[in-house]
Image 1 (cartoon, rainbow, N blue to C red):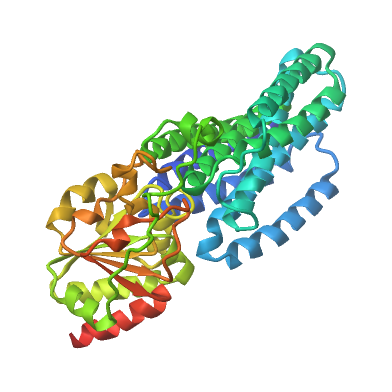
Image 2: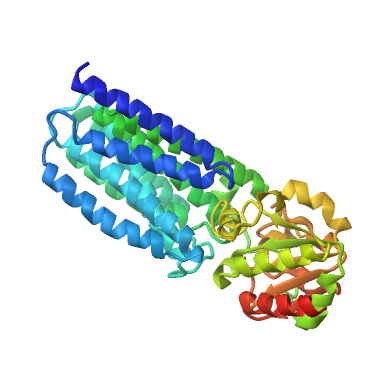
Length: 459
């Protein structure tokens, strides 16, 4: 067996690792093991690459690996749970940009075949869109810019002109194998990526994260085709396919087609940011005390906890687990209602609760928990807002109208833990906060939950 054949067999092993890793990541119970298997596969793949005959500039490769490790490991270990979506967006953008740059470097090495040129131009186009689009997503999530949709004057015409220009550059690059055309394509695609994400805001951002992830996978697969590296083709295709499927699932969870999520702000004829005509004016909320809520929870038969981004902000996942365990010791049935787009990225709440070792059996998906709300005594909403907002179901003028929600308003009592009356990520008011059966507990979620634990013990 030659060295090249041996390396191909190693790459096949790594590809199997990636497939098994994706399978493991499909469930919180096996996600940790899946992540480890994927990391092992990537480590072996990098090691095998160094054994490739004719590999040049090994010193530069080692330097790049050292710099990447020095940046990536501390960043991943130090990142807070609230910032994980931003980190995912940043890393995804880096992947797309790297794929585009590697393709451009391959195109610059000499005369390329038509197939190689097509792969390079595709990777450049999609990778650049993913890079700049992910950068804007990062800025929105990090609150470096507004999370609301931003539509520039005559943006539809600008987008159309850029798309035509990109197509013309692709034709030029294919016909003349022009490196200049490829570089210009990268610049135009970068601008397209910015304009692609700017009009998306609020609760739609998780869908865009998933879509850009699939873009990066496709760019990597195209780069693999240009480099004639089977492992890159397999890995990129896996990421692209899984990202596409996840995007489709997220769109279904939002209750509207992907085109509406991506281009709704561009095609809207009027603003509909409010959930109602008075947007909460002249309405009062009912506030309660920790002792009142503790008694309500301690003597309930069934409690549903609805976690949201505020739970992650407060780093209160361990405290909510302690409260749930305490209630269960008193004979109260406790489950967690998980909305598919709760938080700032797909699966955010699952990851958050898994960190606190919440039993997987207690997690209930939206379709499973919704029929049970009429039989629920208390719903404890911790930091969620848009995913329980009845406007998505009852107000056709609302920006989130049509998005399936957790029907917590059907429960006998609702308790909201919030810092203030500030709207959720979608920027709209929530009529449920003013419902007579809703009790508000204002303050930091972790402090409030800690007080609730102490109060339940003496209730």
